[in-house]
Image (cartoon, rainbow, N blue to C red; front, side, top):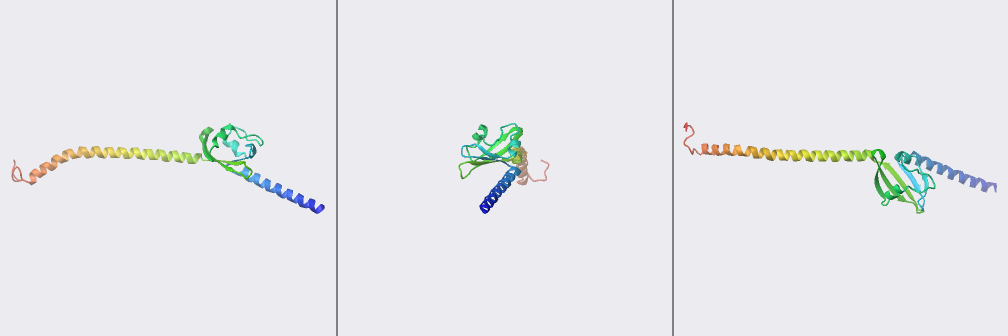
Length: 168
């Protein structure tokens, strides 16, 4: 009986150690992590979520996920703009027991780079259009006087008005 009790206590200690390690790993993530049961109640959530949603919902174990976030999970991946102009990528994965793990990653820097690239592309297209218009205008403006120069050159070269050295 003492051996069985020692084995059970050892198993309990190992399980608690594994749970503590898992909770520590989840809490140490830069991503927000929330684990939901099959009924949509929060089993565990890390504190990063409260940093992502400072004015928003609380993520308390035993409560349901806030409706605003539930609506965001009609798809397995979703991007959401939150207060302060920050962007989150939310991803949902099913667990074996019918629940979900939701991970929220801050993609604000990625969205800012994306906006900067779009602006740079728009600027480049505007500059290209301006260059094309300028070249078209200059080509037209140069072609008219050059046609006259070419015409007079051909008259001189063909000596239509007489030899080249004559004052006429």
